Image (cartoon, rainbow, N blue to C red; front, top):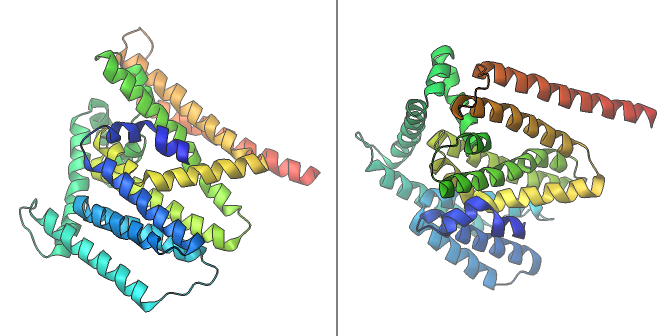
Length: 336
């Protein structure tokens, strides 16, 4: 977990920039330390870490306060052996969440042409942001315009979210040969970081589900839900933008790093085969989609297949890998 926080390329990029994400990652780490220290040792200094982190997050992003506080608070409560909630703790959390939501509603209200109350502002801002992100993504990509012309309109937003989750697309960073080399190298490193982390975020659901301790299983499942909700919201908010989308997503890097560390630890202990199968599926996506990008943009004379054919090939081969793996496991169980 520590190595991911220290070496993850997207974290290094935002950490070297004068933007809010670098500070928010720090403040969430402070809050996490405060929660862990209180659960393990009941040190009163843990509250200083929590207070400092909440104050810092309020200065940069009230919305992140809600996500971090709810995520860490519920996770800490689920890990407790005796799940008792003091009224003052509930009141304190409720006050912070309400104030953060009201402050965020007022802040985003200034960007709306028809502002309303704080809650209405927040809902409208989220809806307009998602629609605008989808519009910008479509306008900036000719092949996406092609896809949207054939897809039913209700599927546009789900497709944008899926495309956003794939950002920064590693095959695109490798296949597009134009541009100055420092930016290309940076794009490849960012893509490598995300595609190294993504399989563990998916696989962590299996490792969590197989955890024997029910209390631990529910606590980790909550963290998984919060992390993926944030990833999906980031993808809907920024669409296929290869800069804004990943920097929104990296705000909760600590949650993602914890899930990846838990998944890797469990896999090493059990020698479970499903991580390898997920990596194989990712490899299929990278090879076939990479070929499509290179054939489309590199000008090497390679045959260019329609993107739907590429998607179909990826889906069929991936399904074959997963189904054959499942059948192999069933056969091994019957033999054993």
